[in-house]
Each structure stands twice: as structure tokens, then as C-alpha cells.
Amino acid sequence: MTSTAAIKKALFQGRDWITTQEWTEPELDTLLEVAADLKRKFKARVPHRYLPDQTIFLMFFDKSTRTRNSFEAGMTQLGGHAHFLTADVMQVSHGESAKDTGIILSSYGHGIAIRHDLIPGQGNAYMREVAKWADKPVINMQCDVDHPCQTLADLMTIREHRGRNTRGLKIAVSWAYAPSYAKPLSVPQGLIMLLPRFGIEVTLAHPPEYGLMPETIEAARENARRGGGAFHVAASMEEAFRDADVVIPKSWGCLDTMGSQPEESLRIAKQYTHWICDARLMALAKPGCLYMHPLPADRGHEVTDEVIDGPHSVVYAEAENRLHTAKAIMALTMADREIEYEA
Ligand code: CP
Figure 1 (cartoon, helix red, strand yellow):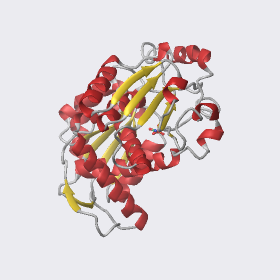
Figure 2 (cartoon, protein in one colour; figure 1 turned 120 degrees about the vertical axis):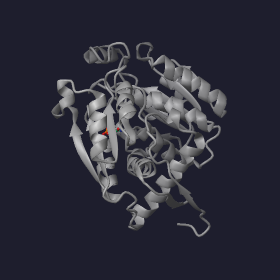
Figure 3 (cartoon, helix red, strand yellow; figure 1 turned 135 degrees about the vertical axis):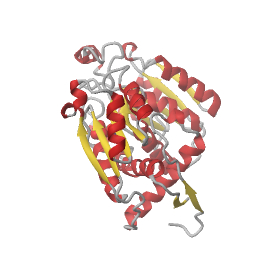
Figure 4 (tube, helix red, strand yellow; figure 1 turned 30 degrees about the horizontal axis):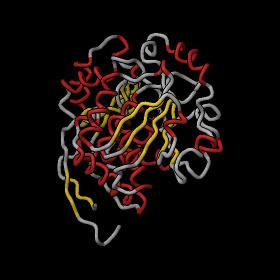
């Protein structure tokens, strides 16, 4: 910690964290300042039990490594407890309503976090219905529209490497080939909506079949106009990577068939196996360009080992920041008194 750091206080008690769109830039700045302070405290082993004896319910409709464990470990470090729940063993699998689930879980604890990301049109609507009835904060651990916990960690990572003033940075958000599964659209959608608000010039690239939700494209354009950034769409990785400061290439599924026929996304993808982030592509970007990926990555398909294990890659720092940002979100929305932090 620096001796010149200002002591600030913040509290967003009771707020839901469903998309970054509902939070202002100063509020997002505060979340990132608190995340940075929590990171310093974690590394210095300074106790930061802002949520003593509190409970958060983590409700997963999909698999997870980073999200589940950053929330579970983070809640323990904040002095509370996280219950891990999978939808397939809850009564929601027998049709129990979002209303009943939200009212009941919020009566047992202090927050509800939900991942429901694989079926376009469902996840965001589901968590908004839970939030309507729950009287505790609802946190989006990834839906069909946004992955705000990931994009906040991504912005934190970009600032750590490129400074707080991100105006004028050029970032490529690109589709890449992956045979493992039809990955959600929410990471690229969340990135194109969030980054232009901070003056960043974002170029999105994808094959024609892999377009994103039109409302997120519209939001990206509007955010670029308001935030002083820019938003472009390109037809190739090469075009997006040229002179980029940061590249974020990853796979996602086809919007139209993702929910009903996920295998169709994988079938169509086979004609685009050359959409791989390799050294040739990285050479088109600026020297010192950052390679980022939210993980899990399909090594050898989305990215070569040479790139993901090479000098451009910040994927492990990016994944680590999921812990610190998840803690900032929980602390600021669930605490019942102001959080004091150094900024
Ligand atoms: N990036 C991310 O959300 O990872 P998990 O799917 O492992 O949670």
C-alpha cells in the first residue's frame, strides 16, 4: 500500500449485479478500486472480514471452475459462507418458480448468485425474476447476455497492465474455433458493451454465422458514442488484430441454435478451424500486445500453446482477478456498513 493513497468509503447495499449496463462508470471505478484494495489485503494477509456470518447461495445451471471457486473462497475470506447449489438437484428442475426460489433463498441468507448461461433468452430473464422477488442482492455469475464478473476482472487486468486511463486503447474481441462445446455468447457481448464506455476502441470479429445478440451490438455502439470509445465489426481475425493493444479471441456458439441444438454450432465451426490465435496473428498486433482469455481455453484450437504460455499472455493474472472482483461485488452489495478502502 502506498502512503499517498486516499482513504475512501463506499457501499452499494442491496444493489443487484446483473449487467454492467446498470452501473455507472464512477460506480464501476469504485468496484475496481475496492477490488484492488482487497487484492493488496489478500496478498499481505490483512484480514478483511466485511461479511461476517453472512451466507450467499451460488446457484449453477452450468459448470464452472473459476466462478464457483472465486465466489466460495472469496466469501470465506470475507468472513461468510457460500452454499454451492446445482439446479439439477434443486426443485427448480421440477419446475419450481423463480419467484418462490428467490423469496425462500433470500429469507435464509444475504445474497443469491446465479449462473444460467447456455440458452439464449432464458438466463438473464430468470435472474431478473429471482431479483424481483428476492429482498437480497442477486449477482449474475454469467447469463445469456452478460458475464459481468468476468468483464470487470478483464477491465481490472487491462488497467493493471496499461494504466487506469484506457482512452484510445485498441482491443480485438474475436471469435475463435473450439470443438469442446458451444460456449456462451455472454463474454464477447459483455466486453463490447463495457469497454467502449472507458474510451476503448473495440473491434469485434467473427464468421457470419456467429453474430451476437443485436441488442448488445446496439448497446456497444451507443456506449462508444457516449463514452468516447469506438466499436467496429470486422470479418477476420487479421483485421481485428492489426495494431491491437489487447486481443481477446475466444469461441462462442450460434445464437439461433445455441439453446436447442448446440451440436449445430460445433458442426458449422468445423469450417473455421483456421480461426486460431497463433504467433503469426500476434505479430500483426502492437509489440507488447496483451493476450487475454476468460478460460477455459481449447488449447491447440482457440489458441496455440506458444501464445497462451508466451510473453503476451496474462490469462492467469486475469483469472486471479476473478477472486478480487467477486469479493468487491459481494462486499459492496451485501455489507450493512460502509467499506473503507485505500484508492
Ligand atoms: N471464465 C469463467 O467464467 O470460468 P468458469 O466457467 O470456470 O467459471
